Length: 465
Image (cartoon, rainbow, N blue to C red):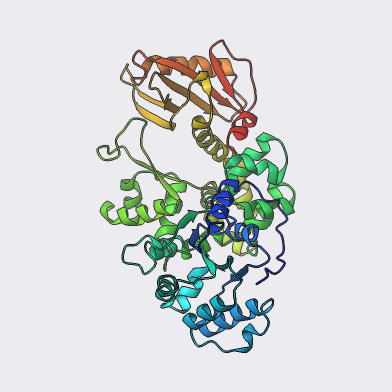
């Protein structure tokens, strides 16, 4: 089988070298393998398959048709290079897989993209694939299934009761790209890259669409605020990939984005007992859309000091600046939404910048130490007053603690921020005799006192590639 020439993305193929290496190694083995790839929509899974597929392989992209039409479409795809393969009507998936096994070149690969669509139209398909894998000792081709419905894909292979449980040699989740790659996609300086990441997050398809629009304001207007924009309804499509109804999830995401971070606050706004929200919040966390935030050093099992944050900049932007103005935008009125955006966007970017600062710490060598995961800390200082720190991390050898602040505003100089952070360090109970490494994440480079580390968008993004 030969892979058809596929339309290439306008963006260059960014990163994913670790994923490609892992998959190529698995496919290069002496025996056929079964591989599962999943991840949220528009993360580049299909492009990854295109990079993997060779001339003798077959890549079939499923859609939402009835099963007989899907089988015929697959046979037609194969027949483009295996003459007359579609001359026969295949009555079932089992028949088409076994017929394909008779004709496929040894060592070839069948890629089934959007596998959940196939399983929806043919619920028996996972069992058919299981039987094919278990009872075909002379298999000639490897099978790779891929899908955007994360919950369905996980259920097919990770649920102990699922037919395909334990069959996959590789299970790969394709995640959003690291922030540092957005400059390669969109160009511009590092500050522009941080602003763009605050809107699009790490989703390469969003980057591609934004690059075609030129400036960031134009991209926001054309892609998100225009009622016919390709991303205007994207969050709903994203949620419906994994849920039958998105009503409760939309409500939760909207409330978190607009300042309700405690489960009691969310429950109060929804008029529901807090216990009723545990499962939907857990589902959103599993999908990578929400994260549970604890103060640095707190134990998740024992603390009640839990906050919920959106874990995706795109959703944060959407529910802060687009969703509240849906009614006006549906009428083509964008002035109110753009006025709200102009007023609130700097604060939104500052929150994303804080999170980028924390994420960059384990990749840095600040003060000559290797660092663990960084978190925010809030609590009571030594003097009894409330205290909050943007960045706190412990060195891998546990000999030092990193204390830092992340500021996006350019109205305050580094000296003022250093003096304020020194005061906080004296108040902080986390230090207690350990070496302290002090760092600032600032929008632009500024002179620093001796012993201080200044991290800029340039240095931070370079670490996160």
